[in-house]
Image 1 (cartoon, one colour):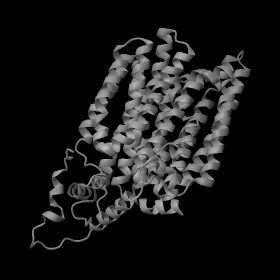
Image 2 (image 1 turned 90 degrees about the vertical axis):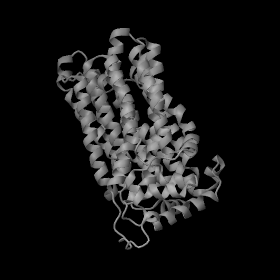
Image 3 (image 1 turned 180 degrees about the vertical axis):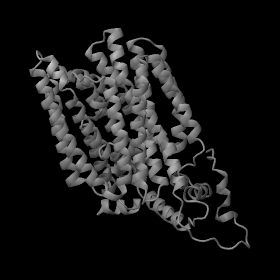
Image 4 (image 1 turned 30 degrees about the vertical axis):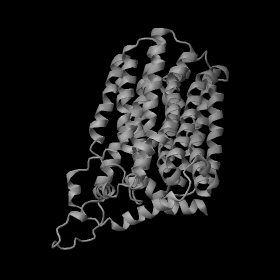
Length: 476
């Protein structure tokens, strides 16, 4: 296995200190390297965000130029999520075999290829292929980044760093909306296709996860990596010992799928993680993201639909920043509860609004004058989602899963997330046509309230706990 590059300052670790040099002080660890590495990895989330946001400005262009059916539009909007589901299970093998860093870098070339297909193949089949490939590559970061972040971060900032991934996702969505103003799929796709190169340049210089290196029996490389993350003046010996003991305990356990059901902690952690993925996707978030432009056209808002979508993306960015600042103080569970309850109320409001719009089609002018109500309801929904249901299922993915099954369990959870995303995004246009938009939103409102109940009764709090402490609580 080719060893990862470690920045030069790592050379000043414990083993390289001169024999007669005075013992260094046991100072507090540095947080900046952890923030830097977490943000660098989370740029993968930005790449995913461009995939998720691309369809909002692109769908109206495709409808205008190809006279596409609702089924074709649903397929173009949803194939990215199907690609995400396909990559999830192979990610289990790749992450444990090749490492977190190498896998993330390996996604770059196919990612670029997918964007080029979207840019240069001017046809519905080309858009379908491009969406599938870019979705496949972007979704790979959903598992790799949370696992990498949870393994490099100290427990007092782990939640905050975990939220960075979702923050970068929403920034990527915002970026896709903004370049949508070009009203040109070629330009949009080419610009997005250059971004994976930027990610590669940035993340190439970050160390591999020290926990992964220890698992692969590269102790010296693991020391260098951990020393970089904690700062060259910090004594890492106690943390290295804890990590070794943690891995030794994990190696005594079976890492197969069978272990997921036989070991209580592994089974419970997986089921909670899957439950959170259900809660996230069945809240209807991808309906809002993928079809935001279309929703505001349907609502008859006087504001430009694309401008309204950009405003929503800005709200999502600000809310995710707030979540990053509060998650290690307020705790994961309370934020999730509040998030789902508020989202349910907002979806009820949207259903009521679209009932009004549907019953007053003859009074089109009056309906348009109330279009801002849809923007307000969706804005509050996005804010609530970004405070809890958006970032925390992914942040908790790396916390809840036992290390011996983390690769396969994380991939199973993420695969279910992306399958659900495909189902939701594909069926929304069909449900809206056959049931009505108002009933569709009410269905998702009920699912939000069911998710709230699941979180109250089954999800544990992980704030301020080490990964070992979390596994002990799940075992108990």
